[in-house]
Length: 493
Image 1 (cartoon, helix red, strand yellow):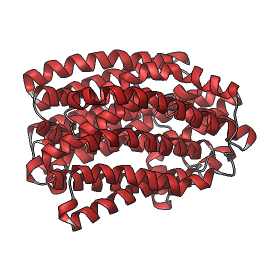
Image 2: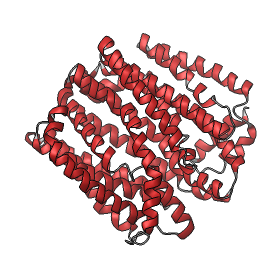
Image 3: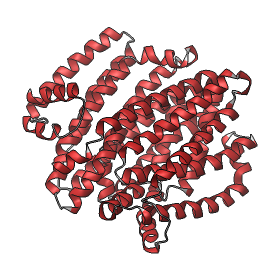
Image 4: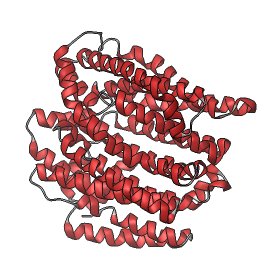
């Protein structure tokens, strides 16, 4: 328990940073959508799509669970990251050169393919991929070295820099354009890398370890193969909307999608804290604790996460027009449906510490790849038949199936049959359905209260929560008022 308390010591600060990161992300999205307009904001998202394709080939070799896994293991044993950091930096350098050469020969066709004829944007795609890779590597190394304070500050600081640059462009209206926004995005990552890199110098001296490089590549090749699945789940909808409808429609859709992707940062925070604990449990062969995590904590966390998303869905009618303006009213229903997609992606994220530490990536990757093909098919059929809203339904269905598959596989590996985490998402599905039918907030809140009440009764009946779970809750550092509320809630069972 002392080890758990140590890992959770900076939980409050990290939670604050993650919350501020979400806020800065929403502010940035709001500025972009409002001042660019749906068409140019759609082009901005196509730019991000382009960089994701490039990074899928070049930097996913290290910007994956390998970075956190090897960094965490090396630091727990040696209090250093010299082998992991140097090996992954070398891999990034070599892959970037190779992909850069390939990109040089195909960039004109890629530009036409994605509708980005501007040469400046094409150059920025490559530069952004490089600085984003360096930023991601540093962030993973801070996570692996248990420096959660800097890990939490990095994305928040980068977000502040980006917003500051955007506000400068707004003040000088003539320079605010898509080109300026892209340049600001690239610059924000570059400045963040320059600021935070010196903090790793002491534990990341440069060295060459052939064995470590081979281990990282051996671990990562399934990730590269299966990463296309995650890529398809996240981006195929926007590409098909651009191809079958218009770039303007991409902007309307992306406005909702960009908000909902921030939800996943919440379980990502828990992943950051939990993964070192799971690593320690595996080293110490404490499988009972891992079973407790799967059968108790994952469902409980899923329930809290789902109730939070349900509350956000209810107020979508108010804050989406407030953030984006009247041009984006069509984004409301899209937001509600995509919130369900983020819910199940978030629940799936809670299994990631187990997937990473026990190297179950091939199994979960197979599920992601399978559902990616499903997502492509559903998106094409639904967009043709239902338009933009069809893409949201297709993405939500694919995410739901992917979540079920991952939950089944991970639990089966520990001889468990447990879908409680999935069941905890049912109340939100009901709330989303009600909000799609009516915009009456009072009625939706009443429905949520009734649904939550019956959910609570079912939780008592099937004993998802126990009073004895308070022992674990009390080890987690959190504000006194919050801990008091949580403890009282557990004691009602």
